[in-house]
Image (cartoon, rainbow, N blue to C red; front, top):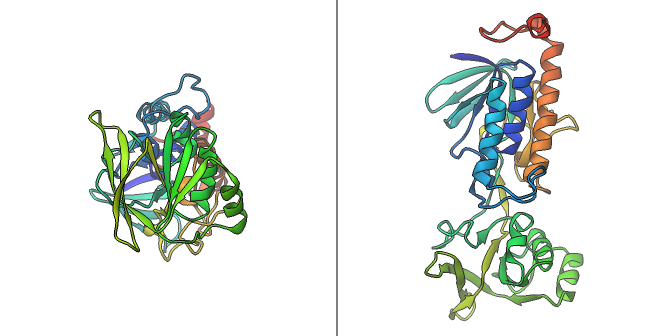
Length: 325
């Protein structure tokens, strides 16, 4: 078993920011990256809404730079997947990955949420090339073009309204009525840049010879008719699933599985903190996730400092006296 002071689960902007702050505070910090280093933003071709990059930056470059900054202060990144978390004994907690076991005084959960997928041909292949799950992130790149929004809930209509700042929008929904609130439906119906295709599902996403989205294949669920609908982009909003399975039954969540925290990013388990999309069902932005990661790390730092005399020494970690010399 490896003994560490802070174990961060997840390597998106929340986890990377948390690692920077706990490592900089001279606490031994290990980040378990998960199946994809950098999280969802690492799949984004262009990021132009993260502060500090006026010319924009690619998702992979952004998370790599954040990682290097955390490593500068001693954070360690382990490219592995957490398979089990045991919170039953209280701190220190036991965390098992595919290849080793860690014992950590503090856990910061930043393993995010995944947008639900349609599971149709072309969806995975053309992410970043016309397929998107974030209008705020990618809408700007579709200025003057035509896009489709798939979904019928609040998120779908909210994002459709946002996208009208840049593009003409067609909402595709599998039913003949929306699940979205009446207020949102009224606003969307009143917007001349939004049209609708109801009772239809996307069967495939098609690309041109350059590998960029050109159309979607639609099937009417009532008539069975199949058509091809031209579009420059496909924005999919059929829900999100927080990656909280590791903590199921051990930590407080809402009805949809989002981890509940207080203003200090503390969960109901002493010594366990959470930040980013595993607890944020509203904003889901890299910048807000980074801020929450900082808040969780600062809370974790204070938690550790308050218990400094009770914690087992860790080889290689600077003591409070040494850190101040």
